[in-house]
Image (cartoon, rainbow, N blue to C red; front, side, top):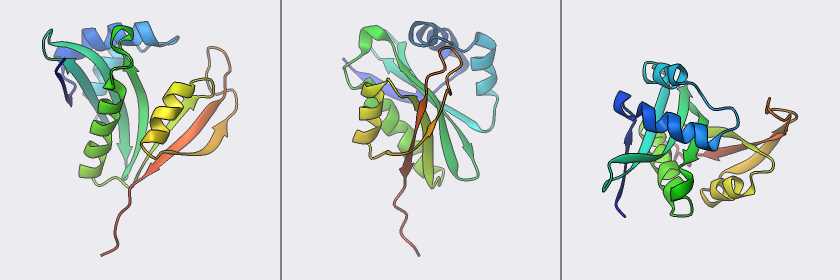
Length: 153
């Protein structure tokens, strides 16, 4: 299977909405996803299966004053365990580096060990806990951060 990662466009909204509905207990609405395309702080990357030309995963972040905060990442259930999440995260890390970010933050459910392991593979470190963060079940969120190794001039 051939996969490409690129910035999300309006043509990707339906697929992103479908994946969001399949993956999240509290998915974003079509209007929320659409508004992210017009948000100058937001950057979203989609992974596409080049054979079907369909979106199979996405990742988003807000970038404010040189710091990125991942808003969400999801891979269609039929495409899990095929390194799509790694490709998306790698693409976002590269994009944020090109935008001169110094770090990337995220929150992840304390029960989501596979996601935490993915982030650790990319050298994110655990640096906090938000008690009762998730509104659907009051689950805690683990805070994780990726630091760019910027050399001093």
